[in-house]
Image 1 (tube, rainbow over the protein chains, first blue to last red):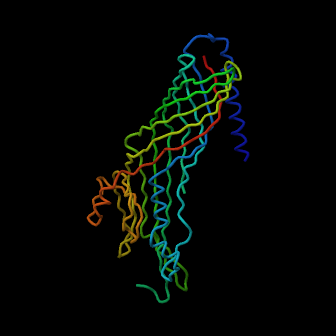
Image 2: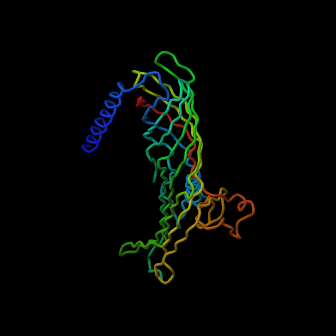
Image 3: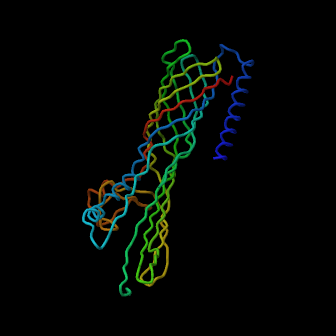
Length: 119
Length: 203
């Protein structure tokens, strides 16, 4: 908990300094000139399909033999619990560098933090 | 030889996972509507994506009798793969921007992505104990394949299967319809995401 608190403080200090420095560049700007350059960072949550790995896990969990054992409870075998599919939900930090070519159009290069799941 | 009064059984335990590494994405956005401090824009883009997937299967045989129980691994399989070619994907997004000042804005974004990583290459490492009690292991390398239809395999039941093989699997006991449907396994990145953030003008 204490470790998380320290990370939080470092995070706020880092981005605070970054915002301050970027605002300090105001004096260097030429307001109406293009292209303009931007930096953005955002917190995103989403869900992806995952696909074949989950198809394998779900069909293996529901295979005919396991179904039979669960339903008939024979003396020669038992199936405990279920194999769960991997969640496709994720939360990531996304950062992007943008170049505004004119008031209407901009291009951007972005990346985000790695994300994964295991069970 | 089985001891008197002993019971034996096999347990299967499966662990699996995937990891998406940081992609590189390129986008073009068009400012659709703007009024005072608020603006709405639409964008499209493409990205280069990489990931790994892994599957660990533990099969243990256990024996129990009056003196206690004993577990010994009969087979352990570790499969992991990463793409030998990064995959291309596409996305579209809608974003709303609220300008706090000429330098700083708040943004809210919705993004729809389409992409599948299918060029997985990896290895399967399996440990086994033979009939004489000797421990050995096999290692196979190849591409990761997927049988999209149910087949009779391994434990005598039907389910879709993932398999590492240097060439497309061509087992004689598989029916024609299944053989036709064997394809490279994929990790489907398609989905939706929503986010909020800050946008800062640099220069």
